[in-house]
Length: 204
Image (cartoon, rainbow, N blue to C red; front, top):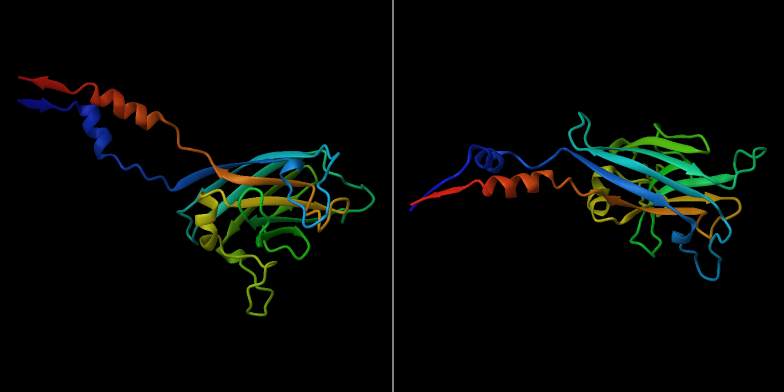
């Protein structure tokens, strides 16, 4: 008994399946915020946000994570440009708070030189060069880390973005929060595999 594998199936089986680019998404809502202690969550806020993050592993200077996020309804006082007190990527699973991974805007400092926050949008590029221990040589909970050191947490959904405003500062831990979660690769290749294997013909 012999089996003939179709050309399409053979090509699929031989093709590499590892991509150098990975896509993530984020949806920010007030109800994802986890207050400390007896602090209240941002009840009554109409703020929302969503966006896409693209991880490129083949950059000449190492991996990069580009983020592009849009917002609506953030509590902003036009006369006070410090009303948004801080925007950070944190390490933490859903329902838990954790240390900073990247300081994007405001306090304690801006570590992503590519970050641009307009009040309605946020863009930037996280890379290993954004690591900052504030010059003291000690890793503190408010310091930024290298993207390389955050890849495992990124891929497992253990990073989140938090936006802290004057209306909802610490210990409220912000007005908006959202987990950064991976978008599964399209099932196209899997469907191709099934279809191609279905073309295998058995010769008696």
